Structures are given as C-alpha cells and as structure tokens.
Amino acid sequence: MADAQDIYGLIAEFETVDTIMSAARRTHAEGYARVDAYTPFPVDGLPEAIGLKRTAVPLIVLIGGLIGGCGGFFMLWYANVISYPWIIAGRPHNSWPAWIPITFELTVLFAGIFAFVGMLGLNGLPRPNHPVFNAPTFHLASRDRFFLCIQKDDERFDLEGTRRFLESLGPVRVMEVPK
Image 1: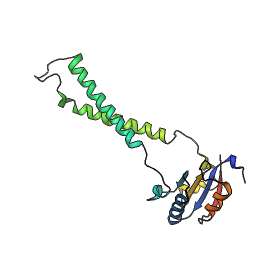
Image 2: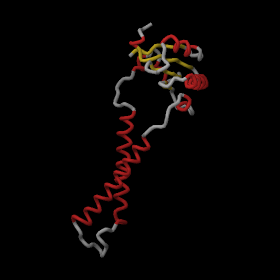
Image 3: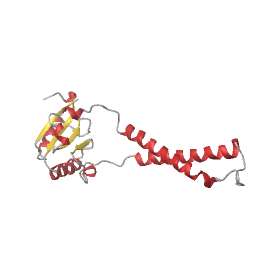
Image 4: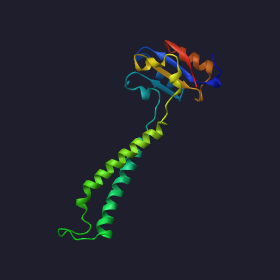
C-alpha cells in the first residue's frame, strides 16, 4: 500500500453498465465531488450520475462567433465606406447585403477556432500522460471494463474510508492510482 501522498486517488473496476451506474449514483449521493468515470463506450446518464456540471464551451463558442461576425462586418464596412468609397453598380457605400457571406464565414471560422482552443484549455490538454493510465488494469477501459475514480484532492477523501466505501459498491477490485 502506497503512502497517501504518493497516489492520485482510488479507482474501482466494474464489469457492467448497471453496476457502474449504481456506483456512480451512490458516490455522488455520498458527497464525493472529484469523481471521474471511464468506460469503453458512452453510457447514457453517467455524467449526470457522477455530478458533472455544464461546461463553458458553448459560451466560448458564442463569444468567438460574435467576435468573428462583428470583426468581419467591421472589416467590410471600413474597407467599403472609409478606405475605398467607390460607387459600384450604383449601390451605396454601406451596402451590407453583399457582406453577409463573408460575415457568416468569419463567424463560423472564429467560432470553430474558439471551440478548438477552448476545449484544449478546459480539458488541460495537451497532456501526454494521465495518472489513471498507471492503474494496473486500466488498459481494459477501452475493451470491456468500467472504472470509477475518486481523486485524492476530494474533500471527503480518506484513504481507508474511501477504500471501504468503494469496496461496498461491489467492484471487481479497488486499486490505488499512483501519481
């Protein structure tokens, strides 16, 4: 058994979707907040069961889209009204209907860039290695096993108490995750 300072947390291994869903609900009801689940395929309702909150990505994408759209519109307005005020085909200088395609494209471009950068930032990426990869049987998470990890920095984490709690959930095994 490693010292509590040398571990990332405790991870429990489960064999079925039903058992991990039950364990996730009980873990959240018990008050653990720094919990993560790893599954070989998306499990409907699992993020809510472990208490994940909504992400800020939609707001980041909206801000990026607004910046791109307003920037594109301003760029075209400045070019056509201030820098080169030529009269083309009898249209006024501020002929905004002609600017809609470019404004739209810059809105989509900036929203996509902000989504990409925002996801990288919020996920803490790039990160080539994560401590849960060091768990002895974690390689099965991409095949047929389900894992529930409680991190050491959770307020309710107590090495022995948390181990007993995880063992009461009926896992195949409970392991320490080294840093």
